[in-house]
Image (cartoon, rainbow, N blue to C red; front, side, top):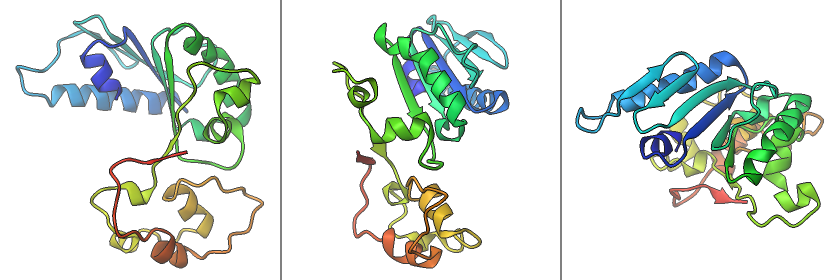
Amino acid sequence: LATFQAYFGLYKEIAIVSASAGQAEKVLDRIKKAFNSMADEFKPNFVRQNLTMLELQNGTKIYSLSSNPDTARGYTGVVYLDEFGVVSEKDSNELWKALYPTITTGGRIVAVSTPKGKKGKFYDLATKSLSELTGKKVLNESVRYRVSVDDVPHIKHARDYGGLFDGLTAEEVQQEYGMMFVDENEDSFYTPDFIAHNLYCKDTVTLKGEQI
């Protein structure tokens, strides 16, 4: 989505905030590779580029940032929170406070992550509306989706994964493949084998995740 928005100049600033600086650089590198893989007649020209920033000829700038609230302030376009669920509870709350003005000034925030326990701002955003979080009516309400292993079009059954679940606990399977928020203090009633063969069985596979 960030690649599409940058290519067509939908936002002049796009910030990608990851759990670490190294991860942020990897995401930006994947975006560069996506642009470079285009046919020559469609490939965008890079005006400036380094490990943390890419500027296209259309004026769009893409920044890669770590999840430091102090460095994430002041962006007015769209901000992507990559793997926001793995950011600590304290840092995720501070980061959200720093970025929230982005929404109120015409920008957007997109938080994407694997769940990691029933804590932190990502859990709040995934389970509550903005109106519920702020205690006041929000005109542009948030939209939430859960995309699990069942939503992968080319996989019709969890057994197609072969032995991928081997060595994982039931909680890890639910979290990593079912996109479920699992509390560390909760006991699972399902074994990994049961989850693999039952919870993820569907006759049909949708092309998009479940709106929650």
